[in-house]
Amino acid sequence: MRRICVVGTGYVGLVTGTCFAEQGNQVACVDIDETKIKLLQSGGMPIYEPGLSELVQRNSAMGRLCFTTSYDEGMRDAEFVFIAVNTPPLASDGGADLRYVEAAAKSIAQHLEHDLIIVNKSTVPIGTGDLVAQIVERERKTEAQFAVVSNPEFLREGSAVADCLNPDRVVLGATDRAAGEAVASLYLSLRCPMIITDLATAEMIKYASNAMLAARISFINEMAAICEALGADVKQVALGMGYDKRIGSSFLEAGLGYGGSCFPKDVKALMHMALTQGCHPQLLQAVEDINNDQRRRAVDKVKELLGPLQGKVICLLGLAFKPNTDDMREAASVDIAKMLQAEGAQVKAYDPVSMAVARLFLPDVEYCTNAYEAASGADAVMVVTDWNEFKQLDMRRLKGVMRNPVLVDGRNIYDGNMLRETGFTYRGTGRN
Ligand code: NAD
Image 1 (cartoon, helix red, strand yellow):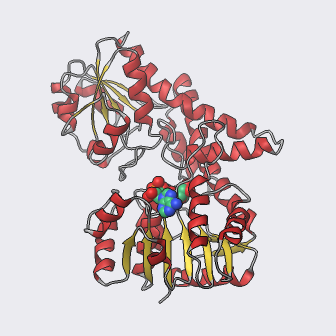
Image 2 (cartoon, rainbow, N blue to C red):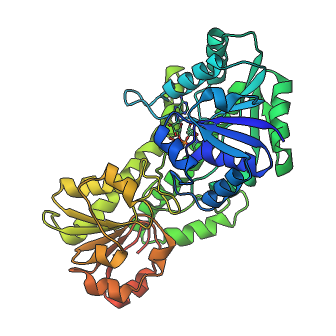
């Protein structure tokens, strides 16, 4: 049993802290957001993540997991302090906004009473590990010793608990090898490959991984546009490509482009870092440009089928940036709804879990209690998030409530021929 403090109780911090507790460690999660901490203390969940609520309840009940706004309380006797705060993009240049990491480092320094290891889990620009060390060195009030280790996180929202307990690999970056190995010991029971390298390389592995995944998505979306023009089916193309072991089948789903709190900001931040060092990140720029095009291309399809959108009613099925999460950050739905509204359309929507969060991003959308209500009176339905429940809809019933049976399938979840037989005008993404 090790004593661990996790600073930042969001998607990464809450899942990481809970999974460490699940493995028998004593974990305190610290956050500056009082509402979030009160909610967690009273047994509530601030986010939707499959399987997380049960684990939080069980480990809290066992006394292995607690939540606090006090660094003093959270860091008491801790051997490790993980930083898992947000690193959003700066509006000015797309670089990572490090103010939350810096504030966390300062607070850790001010409460440093005994030797410990500071582990950075947030996705941060190369060099931030050294910056955290400098801040703690400058701000600490005692002679207690510390080391900084980079431990980037690779979990995916929607399967975060499973990813955390069964990671493909653990990456550690450290100047002090012993500190790196001490953090590695926390992960031994997971029996996964581990790489211990220097701080900068560990930080870079995270950005390079996300950039690669984003590039695959933009690659297949470019193929989708070409498939549409040439009459090929991108789903079959991806299937045929994926059997090639050198290529693999994951992240080859054409759609509305990547979103969420990571890929968009991490591609931007990597480009920014490259540019400031005089590099020319032309592939990353293309990845981002193609991604931005996906939303517009989907709206163009609706316009092609309906003509001017003024006064038209468009139904969005799904709002979250992907299924099994309530996260709306950089979701395709936000861009699409705004583009539709800018053209004078009325937007109705339904999402199984993200509507409460979506209201903050899209206040002028009419939110409905199910897919049929959302499609009622619509001139077109757009599938924006591929939630499983949309795959099981009664399509005759859906068509029956629409004013105009047009369906633009942004996630290729339906069989176009079957829908056409049902009477829909159907457009997929990269296929007919
Ligand atoms: P989040 O916004 O969900 O949570 C961040 C939390 O940190 C918030 O609760 C916030 O109140 C808290 N916080 C901010 N400043 C603080 C401070 N000074 N002290 C204590 N708490 C503070 O963010 P997230 O999605 O969990 O992401 C965290 C980091 O992990 C980011 O760098 C992100 O890029 C990276 N990451 C995220 C994911 C993901 O899927 N969300 C996956 C891998 C890596």
